[in-house]
Image (cartoon, rainbow, N blue to C red; front, top):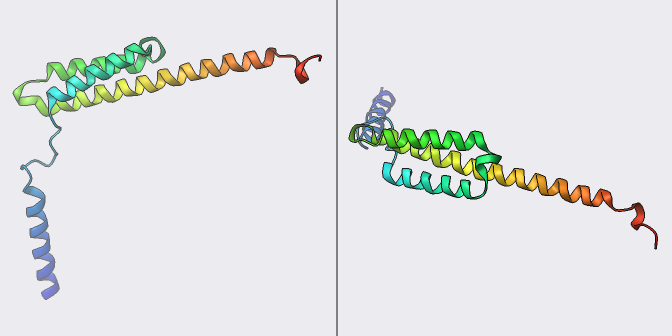
Length: 125
């Protein structure tokens, strides 16, 4: 009986601690303006390295999420705006890395082609 009482007391305390941080079951998403500014910066960096052509799908997603973040940046939907801004930044970072991968693969192919063009065994000496 005492164990049942302690279990109930523990459950009540745990639920009180869990609900004491803002009243929502979801955590706050952060500052929407900062998320939008970060997304804009990441998209600009991705554009600078050629991600528009090398990772077009990811860049389109980043721009779409940025537009959503901007349109939701009102008092009632600031959390959603922040989440969309963070998603836009993540998409832009992915686009940057995808563009770097494509460039590295192209450089690797060029190096392999140059190596294959050499005569076997170092050619005639």
